[in-house]
Image (tube, rainbow, N blue to C red):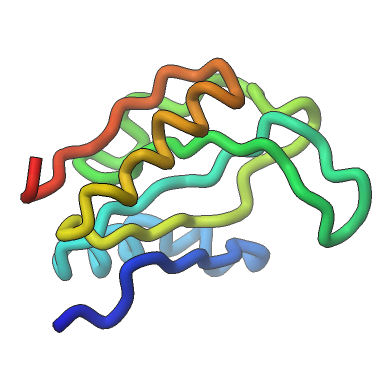
Amino acid sequence: RRGFAVMVMELDEVAYWDNLQALRDFFEARDYAVFLKWPCSRKVNDGGFQRTSYAPLTGALMTPLVPERIATGNDPHDLLILDRHRPELFRLVALGNAECRTKFPKPWAPCD
């Protein structure tokens, strides 16, 4: 039994960014894929919706490198963590690529 299928972690403190590698390693060791949520549209207001793509951080950190400022003035500030045993969740990568016109790859999942 798994602890969760989907988790979003807000990176609003410097300490999170300073420990991004350790966070990635922690979740990856437990068979989760880690993504940086990269917004490609502005929020109209706090709590509003944004179109978002998902840059995989699994494997070598930030490989492929996140493209320069695809977010019109908005920087990434969330991690998306997905259970590798739930391959249907990885469709989010294709949806984000379509919404934001990015080409982030889908990371490997055990059930592929």
